[in-house]
Image (cartoon, rainbow, N blue to C red; front, side, top):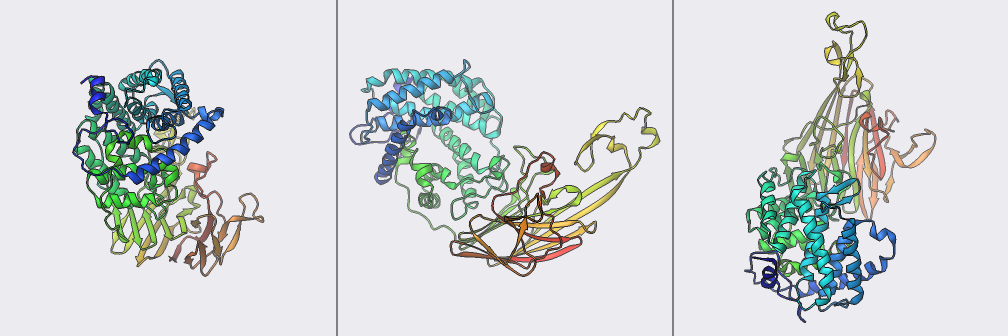
Length: 598
């Protein structure tokens, strides 16, 4: 089928009564009614977005972020072509479209790609732009009577064709990049009908799609799961590959158990940048909505409706979603009736060594799944948090354990074992002192191999692997026990005596922490600060929004709590100390102590 025939046969048109288009799906057997109320909300939000966007175009900064440009093209196209929009066939909107698309063409390299931050001539980042530009092209092409759009469409078509070559012949960095590129190539195939796009998609899909037993993709990142799920939905629709929807279904089923009451998604096990900056489940909205309708799932529909009630829904979803709903008829349909979401559960995500527990308005996470050996890099799970706890608006962001043992820093468990209601975490650390080399390994020049120390802490021209050594040990065992939403944490630390041990409890900023002693700044041990506190004895309470967390009893056997991250961070002047109010319980090895959190 050539492009003109494809557009002619699939475009339903935007007449005086709006009918969503169905450019992507090969499945036309949908009988659900259009969700007119929701579509009206989308239109209202789009009009506000377009007004703000047009006003911002005089600001030079508005032209610096290329995804904002592509998103603007999509939003403006939707407003221009929607017959009920106040921007319908607006000359001002058409002029803005022409400006933005012209600018994108100027930014495009001869190979079809664009830059993104430090990524130069990047095929995957170019693909992210086309996620908005392909729906925009479909919408602009939906009505042949809009002859005034001829130049704008031609410029956009030129950009898409050129970009398509960059994506078809270009490479990737990360697992999710394969699928966003494949998804966009499928959308380009839906527009232009060129077999070469399908050939490249087949090469990527032939590598296989990895998903662990928990329903998570290789990066274990909720941020990039949004990318992958969206990609597989497009690929499943356009290529008529229903098996791809199974990946989406498994992932978003799993994702539900990562969700906190405010929509934040737990990211302790992530291997990407969201490991320390969790995203909201709001970004999954279109995925849950589509799958609720596609699978006739009351469970997914209930999650989608829960997302609609989150406070960031208007900003993240409504403001920019109209073009995607206009380009996909299924999204615009009414969702099935909601099922009841569970109020209580214990979910063991085995592949990540993560347990999620919910008891009414109490949630907790127990984590022992960092990648070993510790390497601080994108693509590695390195978060040292082993426990989190929430009761309503009172939030314990994390519990971490650290020690001064050779400045190795935070505890990171070697997995997670479960015995009834007990969750067992443990780690063994070793450090070494090295003896003289054997006579057969010495040389008079003193020139030895530059090697890494056997404990991975540093490098030197010492041929460490050839030397006899003395071993010092440090063993940490943590037992977390749950009893109807209350938790006890048993610490049992053994090894070299008098090593300083620090339990760090970070509560969300903005609450009230009582029953504690103020800590000191890193630079002046006589200067009190407002973020570090000690629990010397007894119990502390943290309150926020009418909810309270009680923790204790405390203990304070030392006060050295600065730079407890470990050498892997401090050597490079870095830190992963989180924002919030930090409460410390401290001891010396051998150290046994039990606290409760409720």
